[in-house]
Length: 165
Length: 384
Image 1: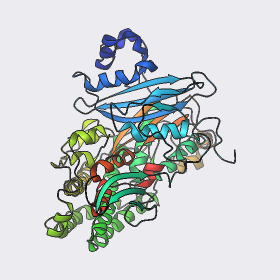
Image 2 (image 1 turned 90 degrees about the horizontal axis):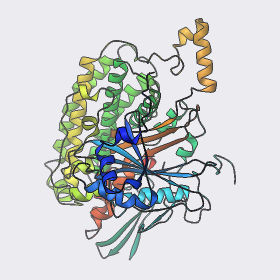
Image 3 (image 1 turned 135 degrees about the vertical axis):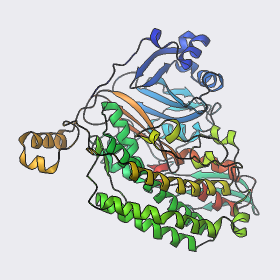
Image 4 (image 1 turned 60 degrees about the horizontal axis):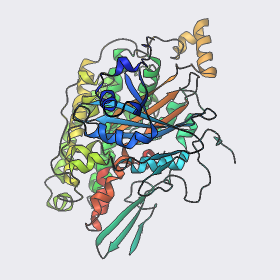
């Protein structure tokens, strides 16, 4: 089982088109990068997320026009608790990149990217429903999988797998 | 008037509820409502070992169970850094394409039946019965096979299996001609599907649609060719594209994919390499049952894998695969233990369902049924 070690050095990865574009726009937008198992992950600052996404979609070197997935990971009890993950795919360049935003449990709010990719609609509703992360600017932020009157966010780590709450 | 196309409806292909705001026969707004099949599979995966998650993945998109297996297993193998032997990879491709044919046959039968062509259902299910018998021969199960495991496939194919597949593959192209004979040139079919529920390429990309829903609008994206996995780069196949993005183009794309898939099955049969069907990783892959009954280390490994699982190095992986419906992706996060920390399934149909309002608003009521059928939704995948 041969796994290459992860590269987390911004200097080594700054030539990748996505990283280069974000660095050229606003160097503080990138909190850290990781290249592990042939996949690039960029940790983006919460306040610059939506503009970073718009930039990655429109830049001719990047062209990440397909939003594959929006999801969330709950690292309870560690802080920052939530990591919202955006998996992007570029149809002309056939490449993937992953953007991540870390949120505290005290205020899990992030800007919605439905203005950049309307397809984020259902994915963000699902994250809101199952994790409780709010997306500001979402056109219809309601529960999608659980019933409307459900109390609680099932995929959080402090929610039991089985039994009653 | 608000009309409820309720969760129990023969044409919604599962428990999909669509709220239709209509004015006579014209549709003003379409609002899909999902969640009736939500079983919390993603949460359950966090409580099971990596190898125990494999049967759960079968049940997510229950019409293409082996594709789900493949995506999950590829993701975990990427996390582990495992090398899969070529014979296992080719077997996976062959079974994956048979699964694609299986899924498209169900789609064709039910879609045609919704629009009114009821004989096509029985024709398609006649072929599907042959494929399900093949699945039963290779894994013991007709539908939820769990045949692909982490590190390879579960069992060697039985003697005579490849001859049966070859005999099916020789028979099948003539059957696809039969279906096309019934539908493609049929003026009633063309009137019900041409120009209906169109979506443009830009809208489809913006709404994250993938698979035949996207390709019928002219966007050339097929993950088997563009981001190949599991030896797909060694196979020759064409990717059918549409032009108008209407129901008829989606129908033609999928029927053409039936032909391409059976061609790939024949290529797999002709070029199947020799070798083991499981990777050489004793801590991850279960040993042969005969070795387990006679050798001590095999017994210990078997016991350890089943009772304690195997630890996966921490990290995360997103594996995307071309399922019959589009891009199916599994995002697996590992924290170094034997149970996955988070498994997220990117359902192709959840994104494709977002195109339904765009396709139907401003059109006629009878076209909603054609549109839902042409997107080919499976509620198990949408709701998980």
